[in-house]
Length: 136
Image (cartoon, rainbow, N blue to C red; front, side):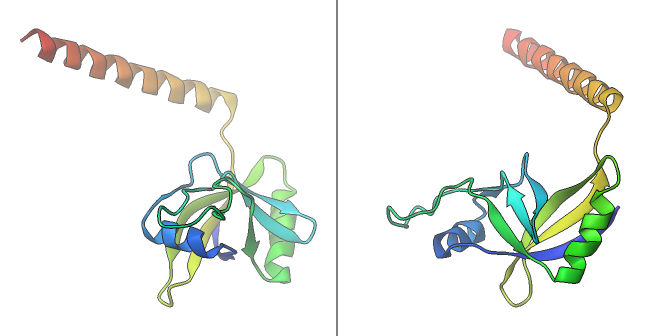
């Protein structure tokens, strides 16, 4: 797995909301489109002190990369099963918002099934403990 740092183009209110920690990478992914990389499904909550001109929380955000980096990503993601996954969003030492991308292989069907089994087992255990504590 290889990681890469990229800048994000954000509106002013989005930066303020991101500084407050009102963002979620759950379900987000990056996609190569033409000669640019875009971040999809990256949720940045509307800034509470903003005005009615707040941008859409799920709008597609463009990532800032050099052409050579985009070319390398295009070559790597051309392999079957590899995708661009955002790992984390942070502010660097200069206060600029960055996203860490990874070129990784997605889960196959058996991995997903085992993950679902683990989650449901954990849910049942938590439910049993909760019910036991209620009876006491």
